[in-house]
Image (cartoon, rainbow, N blue to C red; front, side, top):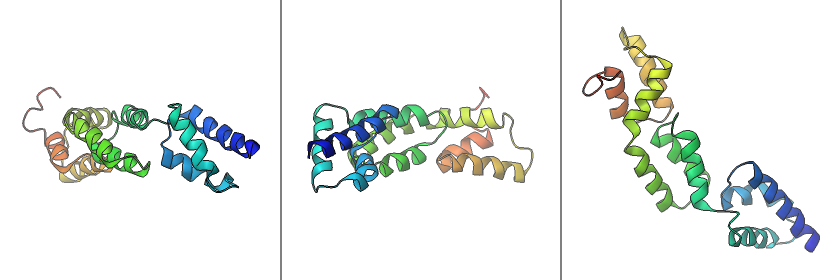
Length: 152
C-alpha cells in the first residue's frame, strides 16, 4: 500500500509542480493509476492538508494568466471546468466584470487598433471579442467607439 500511495503522491506532486491544479483535476488525471479503492482520496486529502492543493491559488492563477486576454465569461467557463466551488468562481468573475471594459479595449487595441470602416470589418472585430469571452454590451462599446472611448 505504501508503494502505491507514493506513486500517486509522486504523480500528483509532478502535476502540481507545473501549475496549480484543483482537487477535481487531480482526481480526473490520476484516477487511472489508483489500484486500491480510496487510495487516491487519501493522497489528495494529505496534499490538501499540507496546502499543496489550494482552491484560492488555482483561481488566482487562472485569473492572472487569462485576464489580460480573455473576458469574464471565458474565464468563468475555465474555472468551472476545473471543478471549483461555485461561490468562489462567482466571486472571481464578479471582480473581473469590473475591469471587463478596459481589458476588452486593450485586447481590441492590440489586435485591430482602428475603428472598423465597414459592416464586415465591424462584424469581424465583434466576433473576435466574443470568441474571447467578452460580453455583448462591452463588445458594442469597444467596437462602436462611442461613450468614453476617447483614450483610444
